[in-house]
Amino acid sequence: IVCDSAAVIDHSLYWAPVASMDEARYLTAILNATALNDLVRPYQAVGAFGPRHFDKYIWQIPIPTFDTSNADHHALAELAEQAETVVKKVEIPVGTGFQRARKLLRDRLIADGIMGGIDIVFNRILSAVG
Image (cartoon, rainbow, N blue to C red):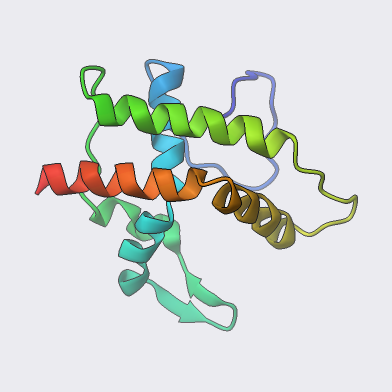
């Protein structure tokens, strides 16, 4: 989530305007869910370093638009907010590559039960879509 209008993105950025921070967090939780990764994996080409082009296939999954009246959508936003709090406390040594840094953060979220919670709620949302 980029809130600073003066931010400069180094390489590339897929973006979408959102109506609220809850909607931004809802989308962030979904895009980082292990369950979404598992659903997208069959569509992905596999390169030397594993599955590629996740971004090309995420919308093959019927992800519903954020609904302010849906309790599960709010639950995902709350889990994303908890994740933000947790990852801010993770120390990443200077010089750590982004893949290793991402693994450190993901491992912490798994250990704290946040990733599991995101997957449970995300799967519940998808099952309601049909």
